[in-house]
Image 1 (tube, one colour):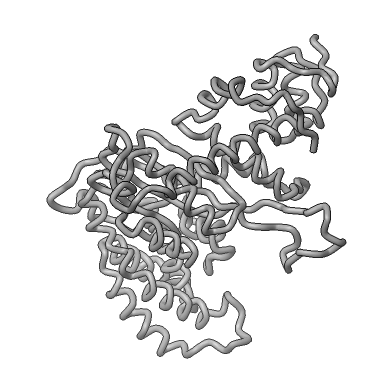
Image 2: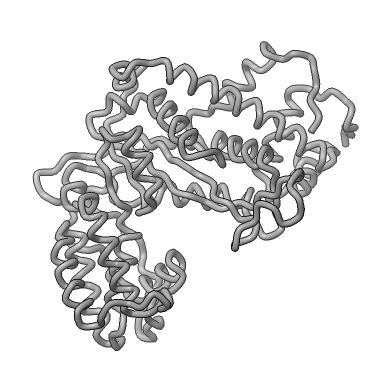
Length: 402
């Protein structure tokens, strides 16, 4: 087995293996074990961490240069593709993950919130997709998975923290995800993952979307949940994209409101009627019924918990009113556009395997470096291939220790 001491200069091939292991293993310690087992390289975890974070910082600098070039473009230039490889459907999906940040220079307890050291990471998926435009809605009936009460109860507990109903004993949550007619097919995925400010994140996403030729795509969609920061980003950088509220988040609100202060045997009928209406783009029908329901239950008190039926109905009503313009799901399917943010949510789960954990703490710079590399390795453009090819040309011969 080849032993590599911390002060040795490693070959580009070994460095590439170190960075791959450091960015993809569950920890730097696991990366060290993986390299020993699979590559017969004996490299200590701290050495892998330093190499991984150094390369991550170099990739961040290169992405920063790309953003600077994008900033110099005029608005007409930003609306044109820099190449001929224009996707049929361009889709940007954004969401947030979680990571623990502990700054070394802060005094004990400084910078902590009521949730401790947990901070939000920002992730975007840029998707080239293929689909057909239809003369009518290709999937007018609510898919069986969303009509399944047991499955929706579990989904609400996962996304919202509670569902409002117990899982029905006579119904299985294992409803298979069948292919919905007209659903667009993903061709390639490119990823931006950052801990930076919303403004910096938005610029990185917009610059990469331009590089991918999205601006010239004939059909464009921006899909996200109801977080206001997502729609601020859309308004500033992607206002020429069709805005779409993730259907899964919308239907979870509807499920909770349908279950609020109702016996279990009545929940299914009300929920399925409301969910079908939302799926069909008739959100105003649900809003009207929720307004009547709110009159029945009354206005929630300020001290009432989130699970109070009055609070659940009022919150759902406000959510649907605010998001109604982004919930024309029948029209989106007719245009061959996606109606869920499943791609970015799946991507966040992949990134979280590396950076999220109750025992994992990062400094701000280390988190940014790892998130950059995580996004690189998940991107179909293979940005690291180009990086490794050109890295020897930019090497200074100086070493950086952190």
